[in-house]
Image (tube, rainbow, N blue to C red; front, side):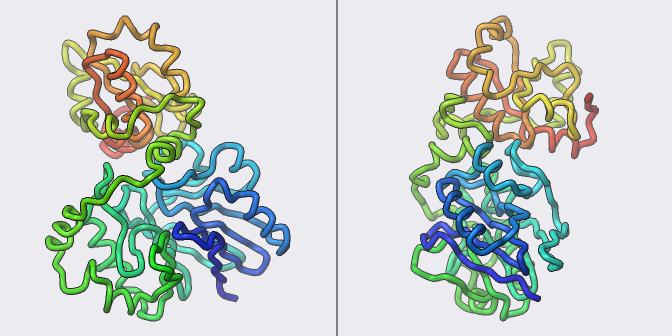
Length: 345
């Protein structure tokens, strides 16, 4: 029994239904269409086990707490995902079982740090890593054209040539392609070196996605725009960043910064732990806690979250509120743990 794949949206933004027997998974669901997905699952008598996200999206709303509960499935994303709504963090080589069939996770960063492809017998769901005759943009924070080149040319293009490619988007009316077709015809890659590809991606000059202000920070944080007054994404992009090693050094100085952790309480004491002495102020309470933080206005503040996305938004919020010495921990507690720096739980 092979995995069957069906695209559900009929638009340039793709959501896929994977089925193996009566077991099902949704790939990159769009929040507004969840009632339609539920009706289709019920009509076909399917049991939804997983929501598989290929990356953190900037052009549509992903699941929130309500729609996640409605689907009642395990949300799966790469460990670099910033969202607190993920149930299962996966990494390179992890396997998801669907009705006895195997879906392998390939970490393919480039479009975003948390981009993955889902590989199964005869097919690959490429998200925004590889599109039909194109590839996902790499000019967002954390984007890396060189890493994307590597992911496509040394990973995806090494799959059998008849492997069906299911992209995350298509703007030309295409539905699927094959690895062989993309390897032969994709103008982003054919005849180009890694350096030439990176230069090409840097010169695209693409406008920001129409819904990026409404979608990106909501998707990164798990909060709605009526719960957190998010800053402009252009302000977030200008936030100063520190590496984990730089923060560690500053914490050992005579004038250490305040470490402000904007994760949820369960994350603060969870698997990644927290920086010793960190002050927990969850994202949705930051604005109303600003008066109590006023005593730190002249002190350097380093803001921390899981992967560095929520904390970047919080840095922009603090800057707008008049805090002059604010920096973001690049890569968040993931980077802190990867450096094997001390944590408390």
